[in-house]
Image (cartoon, rainbow over all chains, first blue to last red; front, side, top):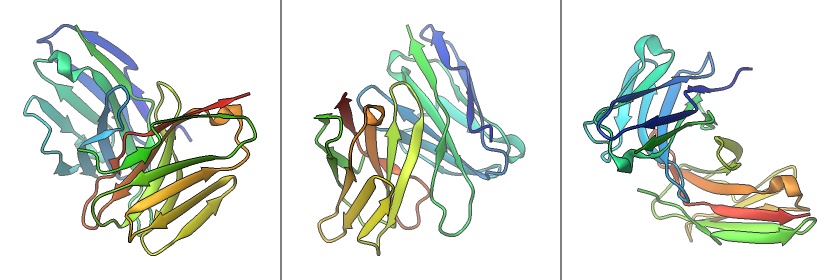
Length: 115
Length: 111
């Protein structure tokens, strides 16, 4: 069991640059989620995929953020024109969709610092 | 936005003591889950309790749910130094895919 893998673990960028993060879910999991977490807070939902379809997106997600999950496998989260307020831990989680299963498996996250 | 609110925000106990954390939420739920997070790491699922259940056990963990008060509690018995972590409750509403997390309780278990 390789678990949920996220790359890179850390990313430092300058304000205004674009960044992209990658998430590899557990292989048989068809549900994939992105969350953002700032210091001292709980994770905040960003978006959800079932297979390759993006089915839910937070109202808080600005148009600078975009996520994809081509072929329903790995996913990428891109932030364009980064701002200092984007500094956070970006967490990916996956799960297997069947009745009664609501448990999420999280990756270790990508820590983004925008200077 | 975060629906759950954990209480207390921080808790410090001696090894061997029990730790109790509480969670309150605002809207009706399908289920409530507890997760644990070690510093700088991802979250690990601990236990799930459905809206029609009142109590659930898993090893040293006991979770209760009171839907009339919109609250839940997590009890860790006979705590160990390795239990030191942040604990989050998360709720899932009917018809929604997302889990909504609280701000967490930071537990420190002193050896």
